[in-house]
Length: 615
Ligand code: F6R
Image (cartoon, rainbow, N blue to C red):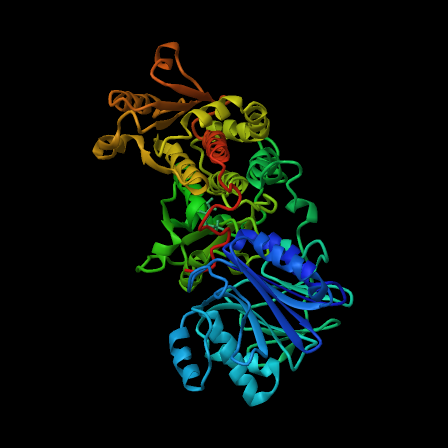
């Protein structure tokens, strides 16, 4: 979390930094700041709260800020110290010659602070970042060279960081360093850019250099020099950034979240393209690098992910076990890291991540990589850290997702998992399910049209959202493949409306949660025709008998059963196996409209960040 930005060139640095930070707000939004260099002076402006507060401050200082062409900026998601102005970045050393912004966590900051206090450093914040400012300045005192100072300082730092530093004595450069935190350099003509992520700079340049871990870089107006861990200058590898500036506009929608929900039919189409051609042709998955004979040797699959991606993994388990006959474990990356996991060369490990930068998942993947398992990464960011760790990189091509609550990336992950499950089935030459799979393929081809039909008329979902928006608690229930949908739908509601919603397997209701049911606890049940339909219906009866209000989400209901529900939301007809892809859209919309009705900050819910780069 946290976003950093830097600019050096001839344009107004303040404008570029602010525009860049506005595209990094998804990484954090509790405070922000910029440092602007003019001549050999550095002016710092900081504000707590949303970026707009910093913008207001800068407006009043336009005469001074507009003359600067070099600067660094930061948007914070607090880890050490409250989100106050004092704790906002940039931070400086004692004499304020050196100024720095940081994304990441310095693990040995206490230890470093003790030494720096002995040197007489004066601390002005509670952050770990300020330690780095003092440390680099202390090294600068020995070398009088900002590059060397940075190189020496990072050797002493344990933890994760992307740093951008400027120094009054070397006013023509920005020095950067990276370890386990993203940093991209935008290459311009007579100007250069630095950012935590592409959206911050895509409107200015499409050429990028991705800094690798342990590298340190010196950026001037006309040049970028990158040094490896040993201090050796390495050639610049320029790549083209994979997004268009258009992708980060709301295109007339009120929020990014609702825009992204509406993009899901195209997300499915993109994902199927070139992979699923016809229902009677095998799936083509060129991105998946295991040969058929290796696939036949697989003894287990482990899916590692967090949050929404973890829920996609639960759907993946269901379909891969069914169609490929391989046992699948799904585990939160944060738990996977801290136990003895069993994996070997016959294990396929699938990491799922929208951002490809989630620290827990990266650590888990790095850990298991040593066990020689094949690592497949399903991600929306083919340019991410996780993508670079992959043996098989499966990009989900959902396009950039700006809203903090994941929606279209979940859909894209689901589709990738359906394709993978069928691909594994076909690679193993399993004859069972042949007809069912042909039907599933046909249904996948028809899915975008069904999604469009669902999204065409959302008035019933809006009505239900308004009706239930004053409730403080919800229970979401489902069974089978839609249990993941219940968990994901409840997570969406929690995240953006701060209403307490919990997902349960419907069969578990009577083993405890039923104690909470009364007229103040609405129960949302997902029931799709299939093997668990009648069972979920019985669980609904149990809830009804406790006077809970019942909302049903279903593809079918008989006249007789209709009366059981207070409200019913119908989805287009779907097989049980593919129904998660339609049911989730109803739950995304329900969460969206409830949050919107309550006037919540839908795209930037409190306490969250889109890319969780701390463990
Ligand atoms: C929920 C949400 C989070 C993420 C989680 C993992 O809407 O977005 O739960 O799913 O932080 O992030 P990724 O998928 O980037 O690894």
